Image (cartoon, rainbow, N blue to C red; front, side, top):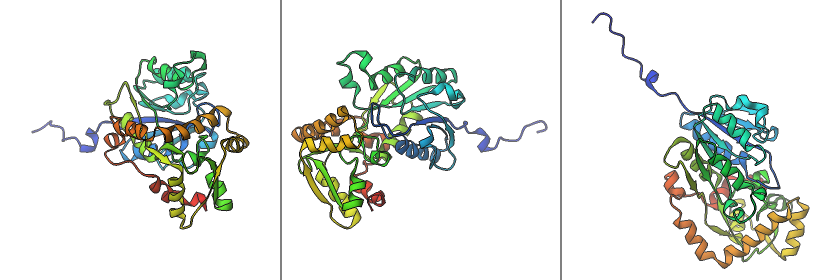
Length: 322
């Protein structure tokens, strides 16, 4: 019939893709340490593969190596007002590396820009910080600010990230392994034969974050992106298998391990937490392993596949030990 318009092309009927703003900061050895770049690059790939758009506000040390299609702006979430334009048009914000002193500025810019959802890369610190005065909070201060922002929110509290060693952002067991394995095919650490520590693969953590950013199913929730406690000895054997040769393990006394980690620049509080956890996860191994398995939604629920193992990680990253 005359005057009828042609049927619209299917492509023209698609909803516009979401724009996700991710933040990444340089490695820190003090409060708020987390591998923002390691996780963020994996997350960017997930979001781009889903057809969404990705913008990154990255400190100078983190501007390289983002996947093709990522819009990268140099700046810092710790000084958000210097790059207010980064927030313009962002539908969601993956808040990683924020600090209590300026997190409200970042959230104010996001809210003014129309951002509807915040996903926080947090830590297993808030549940302990709550027993101390608010002026001492770090992770809990960030979480509370997000909750008060008026935007939808989800917090992700991961266990230690396998790939944190790539950035040197965690004072945990394994932080100096690539260097000592390359130099002398050896590792020196406390509790080599008895220690356990929980780890999650950065790919799984990124997949959890992508789900939280793209879905309303987990708004107002704390997601425990946790892996099971792994024996230190088993992790060393995984790396040795990937390399095709054994690694010598030297069991240090805790005080000698403290000294070694201090020389690497780790703060005393981070060192003590690590040593405590190595002992505690061993003493309560069955209980804490079951706690991990009992988390709902767990990583499998959120990603649709079993968690990646440390064997997987060692094979992917064997080059850093050679």
